[in-house]
Length: 313
Ligand code: 8YV
Image (cartoon, rainbow, N blue to C red; front, side):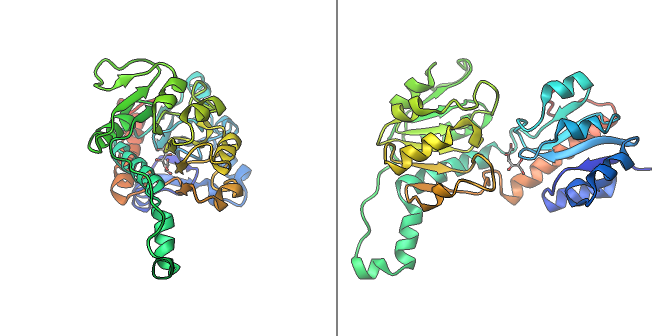
């Protein structure tokens, strides 16, 4: 008989199909009585599958005493209480590396879209302003500008490689200096921001990084600086960012992630110095397939007593 799993929310279609072909999967988000669902699978449920944004609440895990693994379709595990899982003997697997190239691509796209005003230009053409008013106002160059990367992990490294191709000197701030990294290490994020024209946020959301991009960082970035965030909205003090955008105390921002997704602050919607994406940096079918395969591999490995390919705890 196939093993029982709880699936917290929808995933890449082919991954769900694969999951449901091999396991007895219960769809939490579709259940009209989630308490009854948890009670009905409590004895036999051995695993929880979820994505990075949704995670799984401790209240759910507490009702499933035989869960051995939470397998995450995503690299971020900030929506999961890792201490709780560790103490309860629950393994947590995630999907690092396979998404880094696409996330880095989107960071570059957001940076270019921000300084070259791609969305404004698109609207300029569509609304007929080109023929009525002539050329649109000039934009700002990205090539050669100073790039600062907050978080030199797998995504940060992929990003740095791309920024090199734009002749951008790259510096980074990280928990610790990476001896293998050819880029300049700057210990203070404020210092990094003050030296950067583009500040990219690629650090994982942890108690140390959450809220770290506050007023002092945006002030240091200054009125010609761009903030690009492809990590988590929680790293940035969003009300302060809004103030800096509205009052043009920074040049602009490119944001894939927000507080309270997907119900994001409506104040952002009226600003033309911010480019918005719906948390989609890993959203290509190629990467989602690779994430799904790694998530499935973590799950099946653990359930047959083998090491996970990517284990967080
Ligand atoms: C995904 C992510 O959007 O990997 C992460 O942590 O935030 C993203 O890649 C998400 O997990 C998939 O729904």
